[in-house]
Image 1 (spheres, helix red, strand yellow):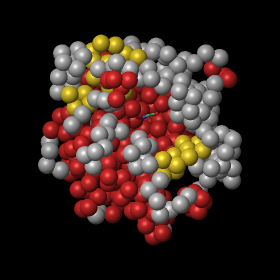
Image 2: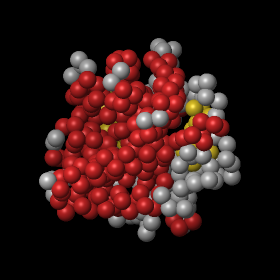
Image 3: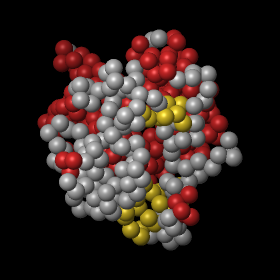
Length: 368
Ligand code: GLY
């Protein structure tokens, strides 16, 4: 699919493939400033890592470099800097070891950290929503994903404050952004000055009190990562609760509808992006578990998800040059519904990569 996409798009520009609408086979292209811009270079890096194809590496380098301009002070940025720099530059550094990628990714972390409000203890996700919707300090569940960049920067750079900020963000989010049944509020609003939590609501879910599927997947992935980075079992136990809330609400094929609580659910569009994010998260959760039965349970759930995503119904195959069909980006705003979207593909490829790597480790340890 990567080769076919490369043939379709204009490779020497900095426009990146973002999504393909239901009835189309043409990519909607976007620029480096879009929140999804890291996913296409990230897919290329994973592809290169798995195939060793030098021509794919060249493309990965080209599209990764396009994102360096996110550091331009004229680009204000927001929490999405985490997605943008992590998927592109951190993968590039992990795979090549080239210090240039590390330098840019560390500068990206600096820029992201500037949105941390010490009074609240979280990163401000969407500065523009302060004016647009009258939301003061807002933190969205997606923002949990961006802690990966801060933790990585704390390990690879000189600013140990990043670790403290990331841990604080996770702790405050854990305290305020979940209901007693461990489903998430997409958005938490805090008083910018006092730091007090005001309310939870939604931006992309069905309603303020419903559980937006991708939000729950972001949360499972995020708290699993926080456990990986801190070793604090409180986060492991919390990630388990979030995963269980997600798993008990799934339909038979393990691919959720776009919101777990949308009315007339069986006629709602699915969201493969939530399934891909969750599969990748559960593989990591399984590998970190301190309980063997739970580890097996999460592994099997992830395997079930990946089998579904690889089936004719969800896989693009020859229909389109993306990897997956049936993702839902923003249902309330009416766009990218039942579409192919680059972040669904990115986390699908990441999950397959984790599956392959972890399966090899498991096989080796069984042999020993
Ligand atoms: N981070 C935006 C989304 O998940 O749609």
